[in-house]
Length: 170
Image (tube, rainbow, N blue to C red; front, side):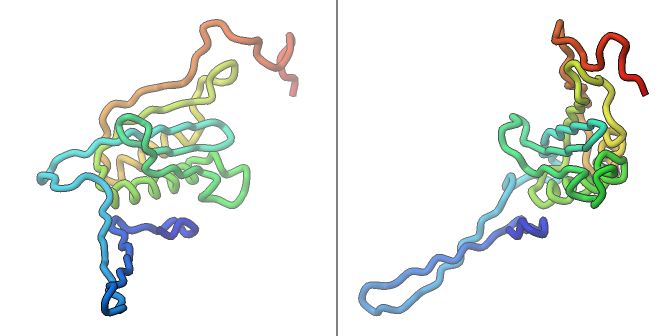
């Protein structure tokens, strides 16, 4: 895996060197490692979960397996653009989602459930500008979309919101 440039192939080869005791000759055995589910039927869906966190400062597209424990790929808007103010833009979210979709196809995931999240808590409950762009790009990349769920944390009764009694004065 070439993590620095974001390149990876679905099959990795590992070289094992065996030394035979009597002849002292080296024998190289090539071992293939394949990722994702094996022996699938034609048209069978392999599901993953896309956790899209869209704040007003950045957009994260994080794809896991169905349990959410195993990360397949995670790309942010800040990894795709140079300037800080463009991290949360729809364009950066689009590029991040496109990278995630390519990696999912390499592994074999072809269908996604979406969990969309805004900042939440005592801050804004509205998703940022990159949320819709990321979701749309995943759909355009050929991923089947299952359930779309909003998982923004909403306080039952939390701490006081910042800004003071008279609010933020511009």
